Image 1 (cartoon, rainbow, N blue to C red):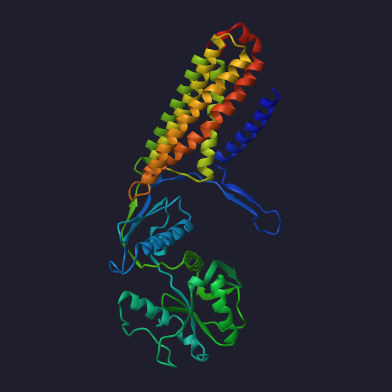
Image 2 (spheres, rainbow, N blue to C red; image 1 turned 45 degrees about the horizontal axis):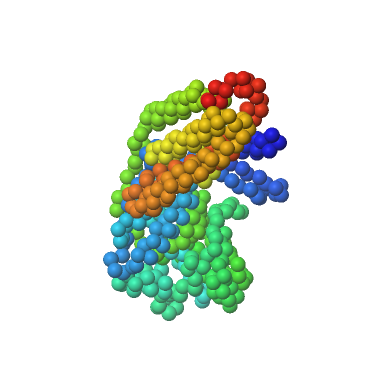
Length: 464
């Protein structure tokens, strides 16, 4: 009994936490332990919904380089950088997939501003720190001008392009300006508001510091241009050696600073992309259909509860409590991970509820057999759970293997909804291994202790 009490306390703590996480008003845990405004713990919880539930934006991107001029790894890296950018847009669980040998499909559920999203995805954000030494009197004249740099010449050569003659060169040498370092040398970048203007604070990688530190040390009081996609955004004078990072100024608006910082954090795209198609996708189910689906699920769960209570009585009551805990844990995990809920994903969750009930039925039928063999109640309960465990374990793990196969094939373009179904079903199966055995056992043992006399006089209360 003492062990059951400890288990009940543990289950209660988990249940209370899951109830809190599952509440629609819960947005996360944000704790400032130092009291200085710096958040030490920052846990966001949200219920992510897919395109079929909330709609959004679907963008098909086409590589601008001719086939054969880049590798499959270049395309995967480009898709990875695109994924970083759309994740930072704050949309709910975006999908980024390589299609064929020169396309990338991006799906953004619940996206608010399609134009900004497309621009952020497509922008190459080639950042360059350019040598402007010797141009002290002319540096500011190049602000907003488009210049030719050694990095751009290298990129043009890779693409088989030639300079069109519209870009400005270094007036001192009549050669392209020298690129000291690109954005690849940045470790982090963040938009900040300081002294009445928006700017971008950046940190360097070890490789970036090995280039930037010596260069700035050797060129103190000389201008250096900060160039974005060939356009000079600012030309500050180097005031000191910069070994760890610095500031990019350029009279940015708030949106411009945040978008540029996002692009710099995400890295330049190895392959330039153009938008092949962009379409706003409406919720295919519609709000009324979603409400009806939720109502049908609730009715189904209530019917299962009634069946368990009527057919198994006291064990059915324990199973009902355990099933409530099962649902709460699943919903909490969906928000904590988070899992994108699409219609197939919700279907996987509902199927997992059925497997949870199936596990309880195996246990209760085994208990009934032990009671009919005239074993004491405590021994019957222990034997029922122990002997049913192997069947529950093997059944769940065989289904998990199938889900793993579905998830693997769900990684192919156009089949992501299969992966969502597999993920929610696997989560339900794993949670069921805990609730069907530990939670149901604890509840049933406590109920048997509380209702011992009625149960001893009326064996049918145990379903026997």
